[in-house]
Image (cartoon, rainbow, N blue to C red; front, side, top):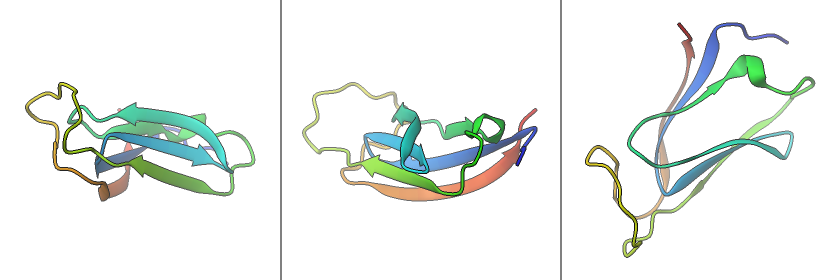
Length: 86
């Protein structure tokens, strides 16, 4: 199934988000304060299942994050939606 001009937008709290299609890793993003975007036209042919895994942010993680990044320890999904890609 084709999804021209549509993207998955995921807002999350955590260190890293990973997106899997039928159990295979297809994209990931380290937290930097912006949504994780994935163009649905890039989905592998035959995809029947998507899974999102989020690694938790550690309270004592020795990493730099921009001001707009959520530095709260733990992990959670804040929002998932399909948007039109312009």
